[in-house]
Length: 403
Ligand SMILES: Cc1ncc(COP(=O)(O)O)c(C=O)c1O
Image (tube, rainbow, N blue to C red; front, side, top):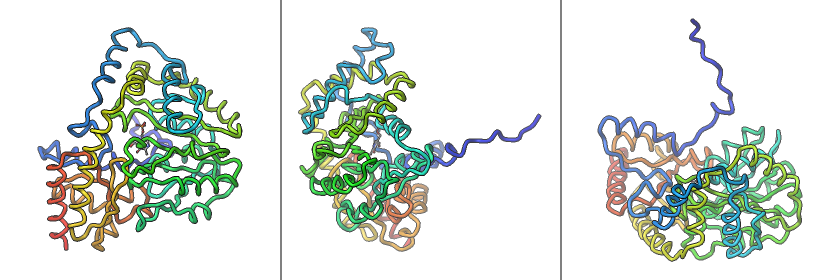
């Protein structure tokens, strides 16, 4: 009997997802009986005090009980597509239900979009640092991701000069993550206008606007990219995961704003891809629909709690020798700079040693960009204040011990 291993496809063996990769050693420690303070995962349900709103849970449960357990149309339930279009109209552009395609989360929308646009040798221009799938998935289609810089010393603002320099005709998708994961920065209308001005010169380029954190904007400056575009094609991405606090439901969407009608072929490709994977979960779509159609004033209370926790983190970080941070204007992330040389040169070792010695879990910055994220780590500021304070006590102790 041969024990020779059956080969794995490189497209799978090359995939890395830093956020979950660091969970592996943490789980080992938990199996040994240790309690880990987790500041690593962008899942609001993993932390106390931010549950999925009851009326949405009830709608999901009612959908199950009422027998909505079959396949839905491939592009999404008509009622949900209409509600999403209305919500996008509220954000300032004339979305129609036919422009909306419901997916198993933004993650699936990205896979379908990449599959429908990218060919061998094409490029995706994405912010550095960025949410890891923007680097991992394009490779599967023979394309590559090039990063444009977010300015580390200027609130992680978009470096428009860098975008301009890196644009060429092979860039098919220009990505904006707004608010940004992992930096928590919010690009304003001027920055967005700058991006659109650049994209306008490249007729085969589509702007991808990942706005999954748009309801967690603490600057008051967030604006939909689609709203700002009178000509450049924009694909807006959003869903139930972050702002509606139900990431496990796996519902998101892409909404296509194509004022100059240049995306007809791509849309045909997207629709074929969507039909070939059947549909997103039907009862979960009905749960999301309830969220969109009901009063949303509950979001204010949730956001207030998140802001309070953000402020605790900023104050603590600024008081710790060896750490620096630009405050976060949105989402629930902060990208913290390590100023001690030893850790600045090896942020992954910092994360692993901190985990093993102090049982605090954060994510290494280089997992969000080998070059532009180096010397940083990301925290999620969703844990309760006492947990955050305890985590910072331990981080401070750790930094002092290793100096
Ligand atoms: C920028 C960004 N886009 C998309 C996602 C995933 O979205 P979904 O849960 O809808 O797949 C995340 C999750 O952390 C994210 O940070």
